[in-house]
Length: 96
Image (cartoon, rainbow, N blue to C red; front, side, top):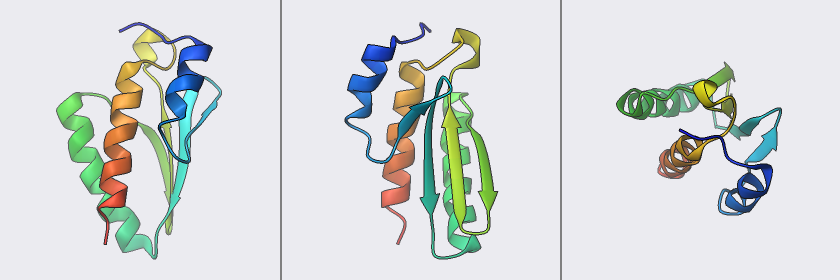
């Protein structure tokens, strides 16, 4: 998997609402009604990550979830990160 250029990353970010490029990662934060909702979404994301064998760096504090995506083997952001970000967006939007 090849690391994407900064220009390509900035162009692809236009299709992801709320994501930014920081410190060589795609970064976003979601806020939920409570811890249960946050954890439910995290569990759904975890299953997708396992299927893809691509795992985020993330932190959860009560109802907030911060996600950082990069492909460690490539030393930065790749198309795998954008694919996973798109899946994460879909899972979060499906949350009741």
